[in-house]
Image (cartoon, rainbow, N blue to C red; front, side, top):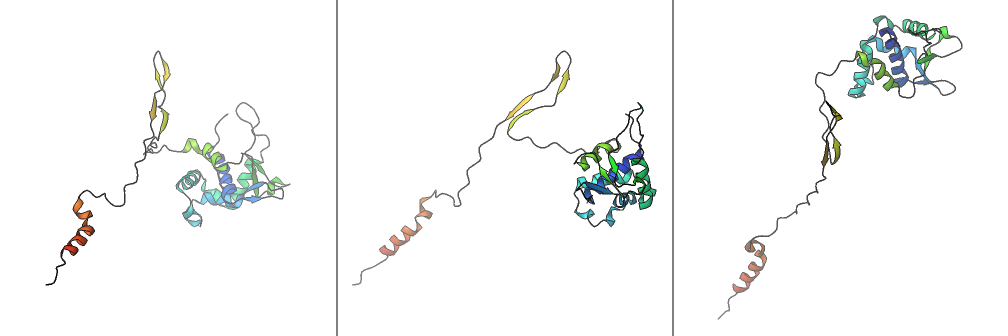
Length: 213
């Protein structure tokens, strides 16, 4: 199957974002992705969204990826709606092999030309769907994150192909070291004199009594 045009990828991804962050539901409880909210992402002004400061890094990265694909004219709600209706209303879409293509979103309503939202047909993980269709546009990170430290257990190294042997890997067992006991709150007494101060004081006080003549 041929790759989706960039414009189509953006429309699908924007609808998925709208379905996730601005969800609506029909009378049967089905999730809907509204065109009006989907058009917002083409404006490329995330700071205008009051929820933007509360999103984590991964969410911001995903939204920025989608915005980078947006045709500027689709920031207009009416133009986005027209583009979405045209894309999703094409009943005879086919790939290069002539096989029918099922749209990932279905227009809502009895009159498709007046639809204001679409029903996602990509499963429950809308964000995962966005990551899949935008993966080919994503740049590899210039500074890859280091892998996490391995804890106790049995670990395998990455597979390496060795001529004459095939794919091989190593195995490493990391033991669970015992936890050190909690140190005492007061150091143990090592010298007799400081620890017997009270007894010494009492002995001295008794010896210091003198008999009167």
